[in-house]
Length: 162
Image (cartoon, rainbow, N blue to C red):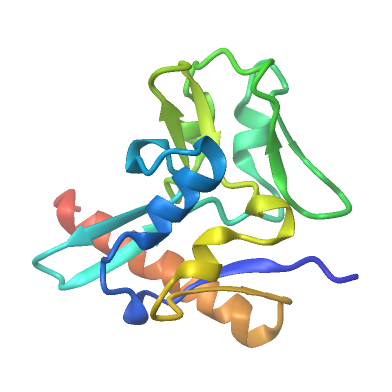
C-alpha cells in the first residue's frame, strides 16, 4: 500500500479553524485549539490563511534534531511519530522544522505533532472546503505540497522583513 500524504490547498482555506477543533477533540477529547496538532494561521494583509501541520517529510530534520530520539519516522507508514515518554520539551524539533509543523503542549511541556490520526485524519474529514486532502502522492499532490510550502516561505520572508 502506498503511503498517503496530507495536502494543504491554501486557496480553499477560509480560516474557519474547524481543523483545529477536530484535531484537538480527536487527540485530547477537548475542543481547544491550543491542543491541536494543526494551526490555521491567517495573514490579513496577504489575505491568506494557511493550515500549518507536519508534512511527514521524506527526510525529517526534526528527527535528526531530537536529542532523545523521541521522534522517529515509521518506514511503513511514513509518519514521523512522537514518543511522548522520551520527549523532554527542549523544542529542538520545533526550531529545526522549516514549516512550523511542531508545537508545544504547554501543560505537558512536550512537543505535539500530527500523526495523521492513524491514517484517518479528522482535520481532513471535517474540513468543509476541501482545503485539506489526504491522498496518495502523485506529481500533482506533491506539487501542491511544494506550492503550499513556497507560499509559507514567501509570507514568512515578507512578514520578517527579509
